[in-house]
Each structure stands twice: as structure tokens, then as C-alpha cells.
Image (cartoon, helix red, strand yellow):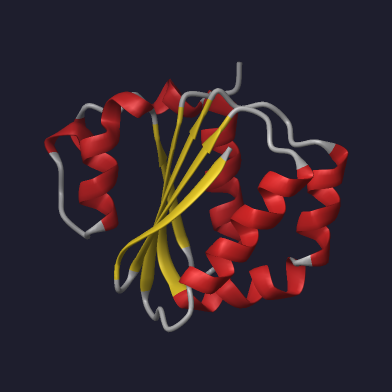
Length: 138
């Protein structure tokens, strides 16, 4: 399941749960592209729980939309990723290093308030308690 919600004029929240099939991917990406219209200096909150690899058909749908998805990169400045899967949090931060104009930071689900604060540019007391091994692959 993919759920896309535009929570403000400059913010998109994306929730991903479980396995993603081709129809889920198509609907989710089309919704993301449509709801990102007009956003500048945007923020994105990804919440990924119960991750399962997308189906082969879902990868095909994503591949077809890559040009539009790369176009979205210029619309967003910050992306917080909340996931219960440590290696996904690590992968998100590695991906963030590849896109110089997009700052990506990941958080475990227990640090949702810290993710929200970081996304809005505020400090959070939870930031000080973050265990550096939270994002280590298992």
C-alpha cells in the first residue's frame, strides 16, 4: 500500500506498508507527481513499515516514471524517512548523499517527533539521544 497526502502547501507525506504491486506503484507515483505540482522548497515525510520488496511489475511502473520522478527532486529540500527496517534507513541516507540539493535524514519509528522537528528545521531533544547504530544494517 502507498498513501500520498499533501499536508500543507510545501509538504507531502508518503506512507508505504507491506508489498507494493504494479497498480499500487502506478497509483502512488501518479498521486505523488500530481500532488507535488506547485511545490517549491518542499518537505517530504516517508513512513515505511512492514517493508517487502515491490513486485517486478511495480519496478517496471517506477522505471517508466523515472524522468518525472527526477523532476520532483528540484521541488523538495528535505526528506525525513521513518522506517522500522534499519537497512532502509541507512540506504535513505546514502541516497541523500547522491543528491546535493536534497537533505535526507532517517529515523526509527520511536523518533517520529525528532523527524517532524528536523523536517521543520527545529531541534529536538530526541536528536541528542539518537543511537548511531540505529541505522546499521542487520
